[in-house]
Length: 412
Image 1 (spheres, rainbow, N blue to C red):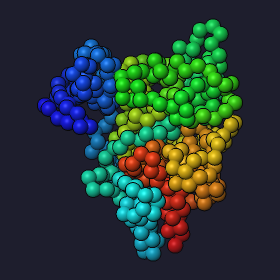
Image 2 (cartoon, rainbow, N blue to C red):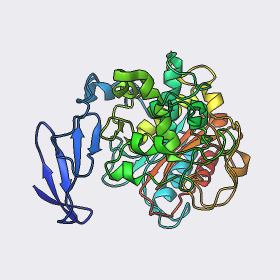
Image 3 (cartoon, rainbow, N blue to C red):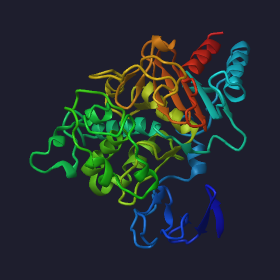
Image 4 (spheres, rainbow, N blue to C red):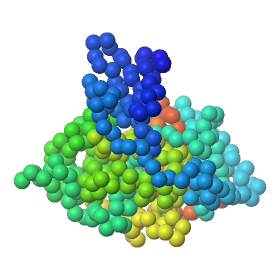
């Protein structure tokens, strides 16, 4: 079938054995090909590879049917998820949510797609842009890094890793390689000391070009001593995920879903990989607003899902504590701020630390992603604020301001 993809001619081939999309943008160059695997999403093939030449992981199996999963009580499912607020509070909260969708109160030209507000474990407000529902996944961008942190925590809970020890990365095992001393904790805290081409570091080759984590992230050399500086880096997050996968071997492909996502009720979250099977856990995750709220609730509840402990006791406290070098004062409008003003924020294990400088209670923290992907957790008020969006590049939704207004409405 002929179609358009980003304005370019594309062929969508519905082959039952390997559904894929081929995009040609220059007749002198081979097409870009992405293959779809049920439960694992789409994978970019290396440029020039035949669609049938690359062996990908098989379809992800074992999850109960979605209707059955949805019928479970919240937060494991969708049943009995809502709570009624007293009239004045509900009205005040609705007005705040309306501002996030219909005004520029939290940033110019913002494009909100979903809002979920949780108080005392129940959803007290939920709204979606036309065309979106509670079951519509969006790309998380860098909220994937906070998911990576939780996955490392789950591996630690199972006794598979020790974050204080060097990360297990095969490409760094040569005698004398100084990178072999970098710990998992340093990777999660963006303190690896590895070279990057600027904060964030460009990872387009992995995201869109068919390159692999092992070709790119593992190749970065040491620039400064590990633990001596903070530098926000997509590579550090991908390396942390790669290290855990290396420890798991054949179990790695199913580990995130079976050990964390499904036990949390995150049945519509998809973590994509590159063609060699490494998770792209710095950005390429698709998640609903409710699933993001479930991940936030895991942290708010100290790593517990009901009576089951998924993260080690004390993990959340450590993950939301600033240890070692911290970010410099943020620039207005940056992804890491989740806000449209300058100021200072701390960083834990792939989690941004908020507080009184943001007008929020001490101990607040957040998952932030580009284009307005935000989950702010306020333990002092037992509140989670999730906002999803498609904000234009360079536009920052002011997450802390939105959270402040939500807290004020809940106190009406």
